[in-house]
Image (cartoon, rainbow, N blue to C red):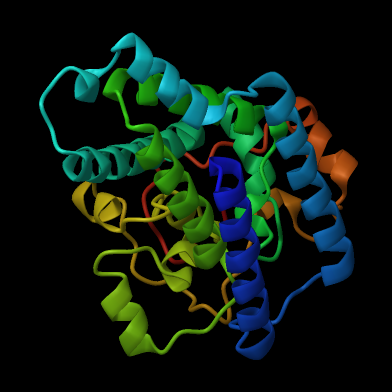
Length: 278
């Protein structure tokens, strides 16, 4: 099985599981037409995939193989077992994604791109894959640089990408978990309830819970927010300025958004307040 086949099978399996889970045990009632939203979100995802294939055809797997052949990167120049190299790669790349995510919330030009993800007024498995094409390309370039610097094994890179993709779909899922199970899982991993806080319209909640896989980064680096101030049922999803009749699920609107609206700055320095209206 090739790396691409593995990622495709994993993607189809996980998204199917989460879709069925959402149907059986939804956490929140959706506010918008699911058919229209999904059509545009999935079209955006398809466009992202095509552009990455055209512009960055080697992918992170190919970059890792190239770095290994050239002897570039830390892990290609020290004695380390394959298992240890894999564990180190997954942990380091996961922390990188955490900090990359925070960066996209702080730098104005990057926030312009990232707000496409946050402007979704509902949150479900499709939201976890909804990103502007330019953000996807920038993220891939950052990942390439990290893979080369680290000297990450190609197999570990594929494993990380499967985990990251799968966890993004899981923790954006509109799924209900028993509180006890949620508390247990989030000791190490990001749960849907934990990440849903990040999609609140309140600035201090948007600027929290950046992790996609390991929950430890938010706890270590002081960005952990356990529950939404208004509770999961009453919290508002999205960005304050894109509520109401704003066509946040229109494909053209999503593609144009970074170039037409700044989206405001959901700055990390803002002080928390339950009365905040963003």
